[in-house]
Length: 496
Image 1: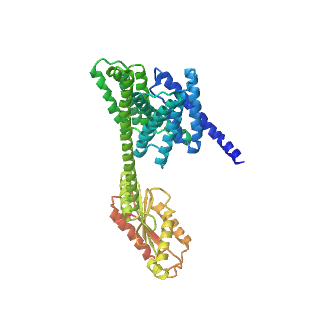
Image 2: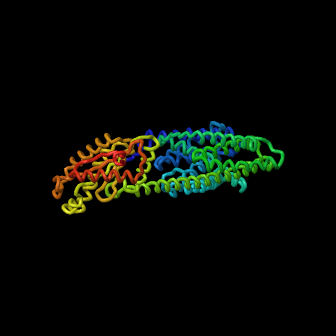
Image 3: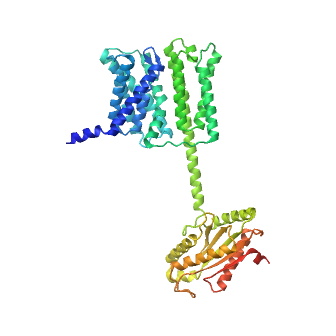
């Protein structure tokens, strides 16, 4: 029964789909490599292993057997259909491809515990050393061993070195771009953020890259001066690394490798001029492009990490600044936030010619409340009053601030005296609805507040301190009238 269940699980639709994606992708890369990157019977870029590595990284390890079977079937079908036969020696290359990709992916997954995104330096270094170089080394060792066992042939050391470099750059050229594509499909994260200036810069960068690839690597060279133009690739590589994200950098790397590989296959480019032997010309071309692109990848990742840390620091500083402007008990604004807000509100009122109201609120006989019920109940009372006030300030730019003790101030931009009266009525009603017992109060058996408001009209010229004093004076007038009431005045009434 257990065997039947495992069999059904192995042939589940999702596993079959993963298998099919590997077969189709790997075969497509075989045809691409055979069509554009063949020198004799050797492919200078074998892109299938890069695509396979990307799928191994995207899929969970439980699907790796299906991916390995996919590589096997795709390699057999691709080689047979394109070359017309499948020689016994090809079995050595098949084993090398399957086991090198699987082993390298296993080691990479073990070393990289966090989710794979390739946006940090550690993952990119592991990519270069494990997925590219170590995988290529496995490919050579397994391939040479299997070739010797199967056919008795052993490649010379120079050919093995060319084999190693070719595999390294092939994986480097295609893995990152394929990973980003497959990962986006898996997580359905196709988001494009268009920035006009960035798009213009991207177009200019692409034009510069095409110009260098065509004029330097896409034609024959007859003197050393034109050969030296290969170093123009480094400034563009740094440009890409420092100005664009990892996905664009990966696509740029893929395009550069494919273009230079195609031109080298056609016996064009500066390295053909420098070396008479085509194999060595391609060998040194691959090393040069790998150096330029890997440098861009590392520097770009370091720059991305730096920007990410700077953004995190800025965000933490903003959060810290917000915390310093929040009263820790009531979670409304504190005196520091009040000072900033009143200055901004006054500036807006003066520039736009709108009224501004400041309401002072004081809990009646709060000291007696603390003496009667204790400071813990006093803290709960302050929190409840702050929430009751805050629920009546409906606009985002309305602010309630605790100024110390039991005193609160409300800043109400674009609010005239009539509107301020309505708000104070609502606040008084909300406090009454709390029905907080206050047996020590001389006026009511429940908690009450007194309020005083001052409204600055658009014609008045008044500073923050004067507005504060006038609102506080109105509050004092409310207390003089017996408390549990509110008094409103405008600035002109008090300036006479």
